Length: 301
Image (cartoon, rainbow, N blue to C red; front, side, top):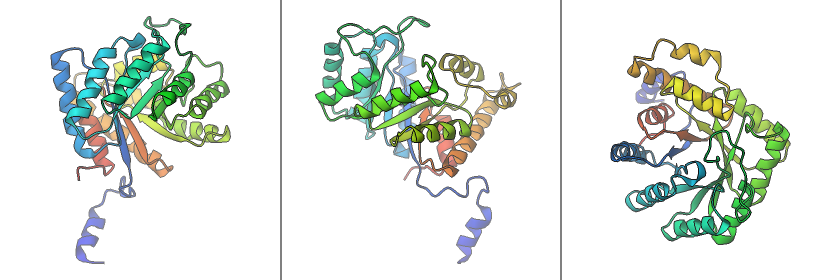
């Protein structure tokens, strides 16, 4: 071994030294409401593009409330960057013909990847009611998209069970229906314990699911906001996480440091368990996701 190699080994981080440079990442954004929010979004896109993500996705608001803004954001990513763009599409409050038209428009502008979701009703807490002329479920949406064009399709998965599912088994059955309809992979809801993902992955495999299950990573930039989101999604917030962010409400820089460390360590443990792809919920801010990727060895090339 030469002296340079010895020096690198001596200074390697014991926490992240085992990573082999084979990690792939993707990022999620939401369409901006204002010009200032648009500037923040494009700053994030430009900062993360050099990491060569597998794709970036753009969300679709409850009830299709951001349809035009989602389309405009996806179209600009396609036009102005080299990043493959994935558009979220839902079944809510639209006919099958309207959704098919949106999908065809995406294909025409060069979008080849759809994140197909049932979607949330426009009114928080209301039950989902499919339209008689619409798609009844995410599985139906996947099947319909495949008749329009050979889209790459990602769907959602829920390590802690979808809040509306009758049981964990029923939730896995629904995941299988989406994959059997033609989906290529599932991206999970965020979680905070690696074992949560590993238990889900094992249960899915036992149920016959052999598709890629990409863990969704939510860096905690605002603990109170994450608590609210966790309550809506049924995600468990462990006491140790609350303890780590206690007393940091007025210290944003310290929060960022803690958030990056916590998320990077979780990703390292997931990597040790065989995970090689990670999907980051950025909330349209790049710094945390960029820092975590840097720690994981995902850097501009």
